[in-house]
Length: 448
Image 1: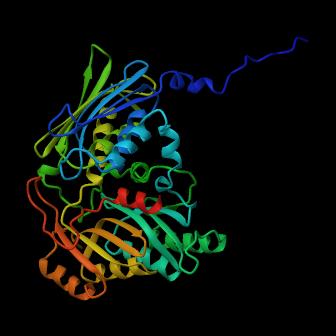
Image 2: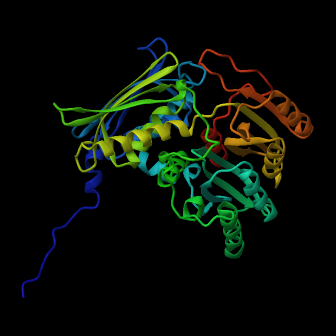
Image 3: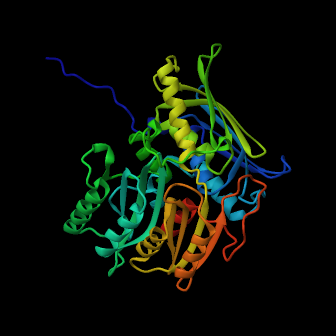
């Protein structure tokens, strides 16, 4: 019998084109008067646009314009970016980091997978254990979650919490109160899992109520929150629930799906109020829905953003049915709204200790304040908590309630209250913290 010989396949072949044509990155501060131009030329590969936008978003850059082209085997991007104050990017260390992360030595995909700040699931990340939860939101739920962890002597060192359509998704980084190390005792983790599951499910048996996920793996934290809510189908809305926030017309995105007959693309057009990380949220959602972006044009017109994406499904098909188009529109609208937080922003700083988050969220709950979004981090011995709050009915917070909260908690921590501006020109109130806190950035610095 003849011996079957399989053809030899070099495992390095997949990276061959990248080694021959490594990514080229340039940071240009001379061509444009009001922004820095970041140009990326690279061999095209699946997910590369998301990886680039992800890095720029993690640096808290504002993308004012962008031009994307990746038809064929080559990927070409031009981004016009500024910092959060609208200035060019001139810091030498930041520019070096951009060139390294996006350039030939960056190996973008590997770095994103191995950065400790990008890890979620339940697993050890350095000296921390990560937990992810999703369920039906209700007033005081974050307080109850943090109380369970405090009672089990888990210290919450960092966390991200999003709410949308009466659903809540959160990723928490905890360690042991006594050892300050990751918790790997299976009995303690099992007890925590059981208590959190019972807490999220409450007295209801509906599977839609919620669950605790203990999956392994490493994913960018914001992308993971999008994935959790997408899998939870938060884009389907919450018909019949009376407490859902009614977003004003200025926050309602206008999304259309058309067809480019000449090139065989579906064209997604988005116009909505501009904000930080808007492009990341849209590209992340399209990527996770298995769509490939071939061309895109991004621009900002005053307080509004216009974004246009030429896409196909990974199998090469366009969006041909009304059902597909409607689903994409709903999913993109949900992705845009998840990060929108109306109302008041509370920034609190105090010396870190076990139970601090539980104490703060308990006082918020007792004062009738409901948390719609939160970011928690610890830098050195200082814990920094950022909460977006409304009253329990989803309405704007009465100033008297905030003053009562300030009096009750102000003797133990520093507090800054900011009203979310209704337009980009409206100034924010000043306070002890002149620097705005951006959750992903702080988390990255903390876990670096």
